[in-house]
Length: 102
Image 1 (cartoon, rainbow, N blue to C red):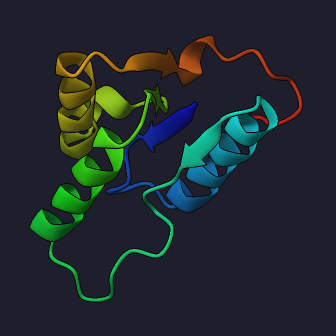
Image 2: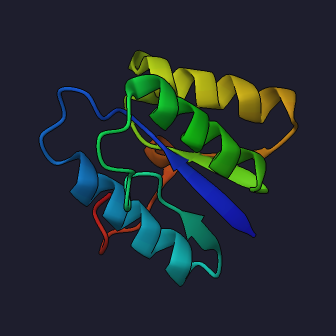
């Protein structure tokens, strides 16, 4: 299953590490993780990044929401799109893995 990772980025120093840990976890669980923080186009505007994220999301079967997603305008928008398009929703705050420390 292709699973898009969504979460806060602005104001989060280690956001790339958080997305990377989620990516590792999802891959280990047998999914194909889609990490929007990987290889963003250089010089892209915020609007272009949002459009890119939504395009990536729409090609997925589910969304993995990192803690704090609900305080992020971008991740909140991605959640709404996922909900409206009936994608499966997974939440970090119910994640029980002791080794990957998402």
